[in-house]
Amino acid sequence: MPGASDAHIVVTMGFLDKLLGRAKETADSADEKAGPALDQAQHAAGDALDKTKDVAGDTADKARETLGTASDEVEGTASEAATSVAEAAEADPDPGPAAA
Image (cartoon, rainbow, N blue to C red):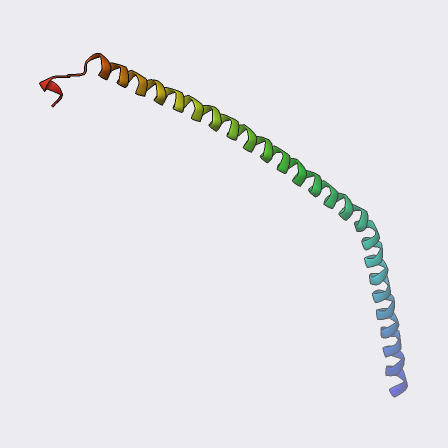
């Protein structure tokens, strides 16, 4: 009987060899097919990152411009207010007891 079970093991091993061999071939085939798709995905991700950086940079530039304009307007308004207060003080140097 030892010979019969040895033959059965050989058949089982042959089956496993075929199964594992096919699995390896399938994995190699999947790797070959996935390689170009991976390259395309990496390229698309790089393009998306570049576009995001460009948009973020443009947005930051616009924000700086807007803040600069707003700052200039605030400075102008503050200067005008200071001038008006100075002119009012010159026009009426003695505000009287009501101001005290």
